[in-house]
Length: 411
Image (cartoon, rainbow, N blue to C red; front, side, top):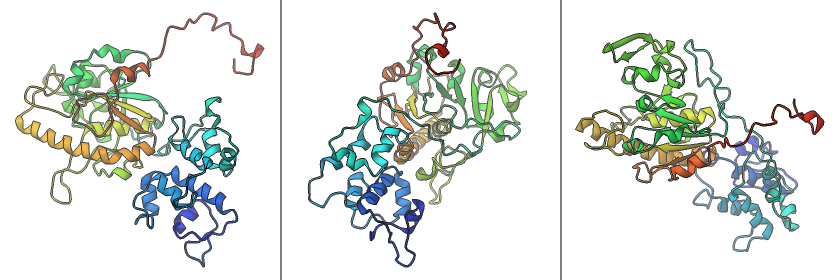
């Protein structure tokens, strides 16, 4: 097969037999099978990797889309109707059950016999067979993302693999909610900044200087707290004495430390080895950058392994009458700057969307009136209902159960 589109880097990546003397050529026997295999590899690759392989785009193709990939690899003749097998093959990637880690999906989309299966009139067996999903290892599993106060590794990466979390922010809309709904079993919350004072979350993060956050947050052993490694030897502000406390951040209970960067690039955000929360204060063009604790909170949850995040109280709006849901004043100048940050972060999150989706990290905004439009809206009531754990089952008989008499298992 003489392929004018593949690059040597791609061929080497997938161990195709490259002929060194013939640039951009592969030596294969089953042309159609290899096209199918190559297509499945491309379809599972994030868009930014495709752009790395094809920095100037595909020859003669204006955009990177799944439909164009089929045309590129010649699975159908240009202008000719697709065969039923090809149509079914394409449906796999849009199927609501499709997962890269599912044995059935792997069989039907990444094996060369997929076309034979569908060509014989067979249907996808997922409707009648439970999916067996293999756990995909987190790409940051060997990185030192989280640390103890002494700098040693804290192995938290992917500890919450595939779980759901709710980020609770300081927008006025959060104050209009009954906070007890987040205390239900199965609901994991991460508060940011001083939202963690009157609301007790599962996790908390603050990225500003440590003296800006309430001592009730720092001293609560119930909250797992994430903050900068450089803050570990600093002291929080003691409200009672109106001065810095004698307690260091490192001596507070439930502390997790991380390093941080301000060099946000959408296509690099997922692969970073530290928490990124935005862009530098001054950009190369002389304009001001923007940073946000929201971006840091999302990055922390991504490294923890969460696959779905719902935003609550992320209003991205502020005026003289509506600042925060907790007691905190803001000057007109500060409000103006916040709106500038909102605009920048909204743009950054829009750019980030395709890359986090390719990593199966999905973010939704539960406030339909939020100024953050980068993420799709999802009703809060529905999100909670889908994640609450039912406690109505009885414990009766659990201690008397003996698996050795019924089926294989562990006592």
